[in-house]
Length: 183
Image (cartoon, rainbow, N blue to C red; front, side, top):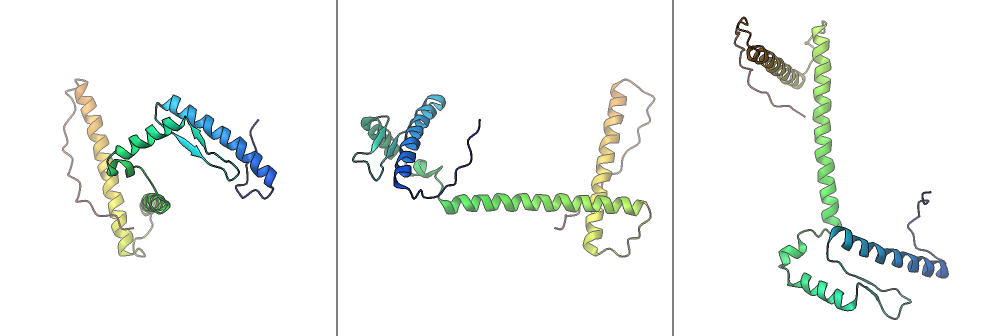
């Protein structure tokens, strides 16, 4: 049975808030123990609630001091290497989303040009196309010709490899220079 989604907001009721804090703290400490065991990493935790007189420390006060001392002796570059603040995290997410958008636009444009190429083969006129469309269409046609040449060469090589000497070698023309894809 799955748990229902919890609304992440401040709990107004004082007793409910204390009870939730106690349960979550216990679960957090259990997860700390599990991650150190399963992943063989050194970790520590200090949890201090507003109603607690002493902070809860995991695994022990000396263990926390040892882990913290080990961390502080690392070079500062090593300490901050994998740290992210919110700005850096969001910037990485934005860059990743921009890259995905750029790739999707390129893929969509290739599909549009493939459809246009098919329409041209069935009789559509090229007179109403812009220079950018014609350039992109030329790029798609060049890629299709390269794919066909590659497949013909593969079939030819397979036939030659099978020992068939009856195949006549027809040299393929080198593909025209690549045209950049405008997006």
